[in-house]
Length: 294
Image (tube, rainbow, N blue to C red; front, top):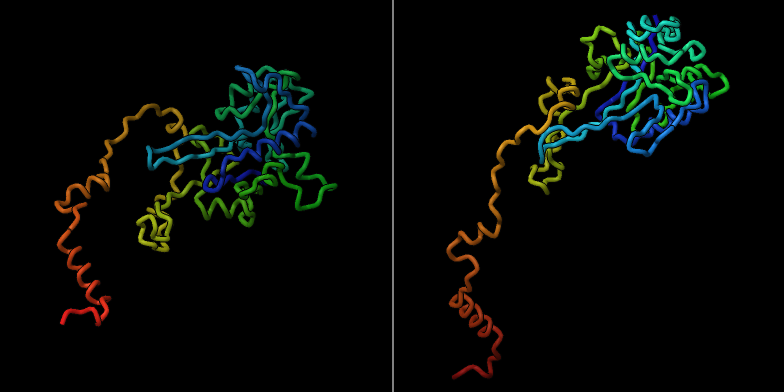
């Protein structure tokens, strides 16, 4: 069975939100739109987006790290949003595995939103219909577009190629190969929904510029992955999001260079005897021979 999905590389996502804006632009003018922005800038903003990027900070200074985490509908192979829909508006398409919404049947009851453990469903307030990512179903099969453009808008817009689109059940697809090579993982697999979208984990790298100017020794391997067997371990974003105010380990104060100089007994003192000897020797070498004493 074909299962189209996204594979997102967290190692190269820079959080530029190009995927967010391109998704909004395409879908608001396509079969899904128009997507409303009722209160885009108020204290209680309301807007319909199929794709969002969440940003987290991990670790403690100076070893902190910023993680950009794109999230949209995961097109689960066993989607819990489908059986709870009272009108049959939510359905999973057999030919490509996409989970879609029939807007003509949707009554905006939000049952699908309550059933989704990933928060991927949104209510369009203007239309009172539940909306979600379609993986640009109206684009990927559009023969009016060049073949290279028959991909989701977010994939085409990503400047770092952090998004890979393809059939994860096809071992020869780029998406499937990326999952196998990089240890791609599913988000919250314990829910048993079998999400189709996968994430490629971040890899920890050793600090150091490799040039030697920062004290790293100039080794070419300074930026090589650390603890290679564990580099593919997925980041627990749930624990990361709820952790608050963990006490930081005490840091050892690095002595100031001026303090080190002050600790030396002769630091900063002028050696007059050595200076006088030096001046006398220079004067003797430069003094004309005619003026030397007989």
